Every structure is written in structure tokens, then in C-alpha cells.
Length: 378
Ligand code: GLY
Image 1 (cartoon, helix red, strand yellow):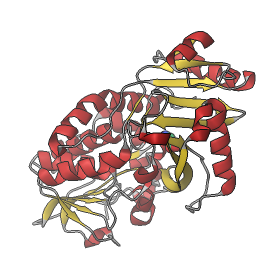
Image 2 (cartoon, rainbow, N blue to C red):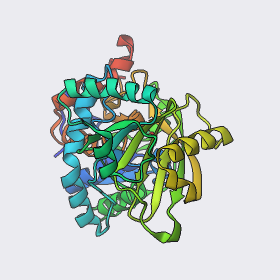
Image 3 (cartoon, rainbow, N blue to C red):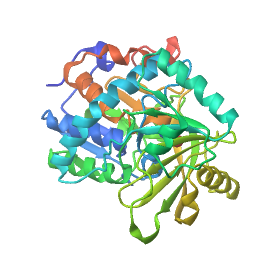
């Protein structure tokens, strides 16, 4: 059952409590923690006035441990790879538990460059990723077009990341909610103003950008504008891979779904509003059509904006909150919330159950953002 090791959970509150675990936030991370904890026999309540309405509602659902391995992010890259490796079993177990398809597809990802300059930029990153031993393989232009004939003839070159996949976040969240509830977790559709209002032995703050107000951690909002297109005639899109493209200096991705939807994303803006701007729509559409011309014939069905929870080092913050006994956080997933969902859920649940933090979490603990004088228990 629950650990009473103060070292792991920042101390343990005195009981008795209404529940073992209160999760604040019903996005993919919060719901999957609730599901895993309920599977372990813990009494769990998830608090959220609008489940699944945060960043995951806008997210494309790319599972990209390789194409999103960036310079200087070794520890994050290792966590992404670990979590991506959990996805096949996680998706299968979830589909079974929820009785629902979550849109997990394993067609791989193509990373392409439109111009010679775009290709030079892409090649530099592939060389770095290959240097880490990650699976990404440059392709001859003919091989690229054999894989994906819908690419524009102008596309200068590309590479395949065969292990970078996708899931549909708008199917994932309802499935996680169903699985969590079937396992015994309860959903309480009300906001949480103060953590001290919760009657739980352990509280997990998985509230995305909302974690800043609840915990004082430096979590900032990073705006992303995203489009949703639909193939004409309700058919499937004319390409199957996720396509990540550099196009005249813009960096975009195209995520095709079986339903005919294509998600086009995304801006990365250091701002906290969710307005959709004409300029962003123009840039995303221009880059998308430059890479895959047939997209000009698709319906534009949605333009939306979401807020990614970013931290000062853009890595997640997962673990015990210093100075707050019984409070854990799982947020700051920034551009990687969907891919990091399984590993976050598993490791937070292990921390709650055993009291021992997994070594994988060491680079991501909240204490890196908490001044020494605030780390003592209240
Ligand atoms: N991971 C994609 C994005 O945040 O736009």
C-alpha cells in the first residue's frame, strides 16, 4: 500500500483521509496516473471542471522520441525513448480496458526539407540523432517519393524515423477516463482553488499550466496554434506517414488519421492567450501545401490554439514537491505530453506505492526549481 517514506513523497500527511490519491487535472497525464493508481487498489479521485479540455484537446498526438531529440536535451531524449517504448503495450491495454480504439498508428515518420537550406538544417539534426544511436535514416529523393508519393516534387530530401508514431489525443482522453473509472477512480468535476482543500493522503498536481498557481513552480504557458483539415469525400488522407517538414524556414508537422483528418501544427509562441491569428494560419497552410500540394483541396475544419506547460529548462517536472508533504507534481511536459504519458503514469504510481523514486526521474524532480530555503517541510 502507500509508502510512508518521507524521502520519496516529501513526508506523509496524517490520516485518516477520504481518499488515498487526489489527482488535480484530467488530461492524459492525470487520468493515466489515476488509472494506474486505481489498478493498484488505491482510492482515487480526479478533480477537473473540464476533463480533456487543456493542451491535449489541441495536440496532434505525435509519439516522436527521435524526431524530437534536440541538441542539448540528452536526459529528456532518454525519457522520451523510454516512454515511447511503453506505448505499444499501453495502447493495447488501454484499448482493452476502455473498450475503445485510441487511434494508435505505427506508420512511422518522414522528416523532410523543402529547399536546400531546409535540408541542410534537417541534416544537421539527423547527424546529431544518429550520433546518439537513434533510428533515423536519410533517404534518396526517389526512395522518399516511393514511400510517400503525395510529397511535392520540390521537396529536396528527407529521412525516415520508423519508430516515431502517433495516437489520437481526442480518443485517448475519453478512453483513459473510461479506463480510470472502470478501475474504480472517481471524477469530481469542480476546480481546485487550494491543495489544502483536498482530503487525500497524496495529492498529484497534473494540471498542466494550472500547476503554477497551485504549487508556485515556474510553469509557463507556451501557445501553439494548430489546424485540422479533412480529406474530401470522407476518404483517408493521401499519405500515411507523419510528416515533419522544414519549409522555407518554417517547421511544421502533418499528422494523417484514418478518419480523413490531417492535423497541421504548430506555432510555438511565448504567450498565454488562445487567439487564432490569420498570420499563423497563413504560415501553417503555406508550409503544409508546399510540402503536400493535395492539402490545398482539403476542407479546413478547425483552427485552434492550446497552451503547453513549459518549464525554465523545457523538461517535465515530476516528483515530490519540497516543503509540501504528500504533494507530488507531474507537469511541464511542454511539447511531449502525449508521448510522456505512459512513463509519467508508471513512475508516479510507483513512487506513490513504494515510496521510491525511479532513477529515471532524477533529472526531472521539482527541487531543481525550489530554492534551498524553501525545501524544508512546512
Ligand atoms: N509536440 C508537438 C507540439 O508541441 O507542437
